[in-house]
Image (cartoon, rainbow, N blue to C red; front, side, top):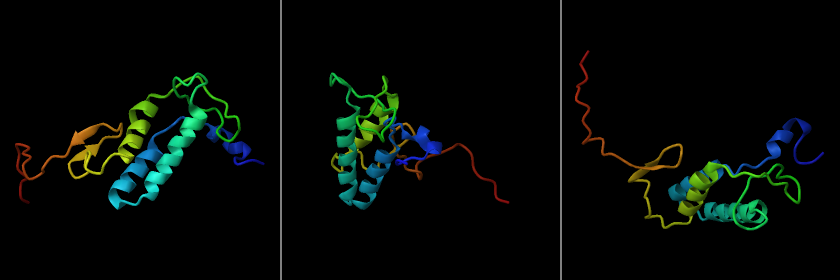
Length: 129
């Protein structure tokens, strides 16, 4: 038996999802531990080695990441470009670029400014009980 049991063969694909590199970015920013950058570099190198299409003009997802050569799909997911590559870029950016004390990221990796809660007004007051 290989890395995956027959029950998990559907898990052998790689869609270039962003969640792992997103986690590495936040962990690096919080801890400043260079191991998260090293892991991100290893992930990016693997994407470069296994998901670049034959003509080298783009990337694609994989049918089965447990096999060599890796059987490629003929598609690229939007979250690869919009999220995974963005978080890899941010992982290797200076820590002062988009500091977490000034911005937040939504679930699609869009950057939003943090608001000062002491200055925010809702127009209503809480009634005392």
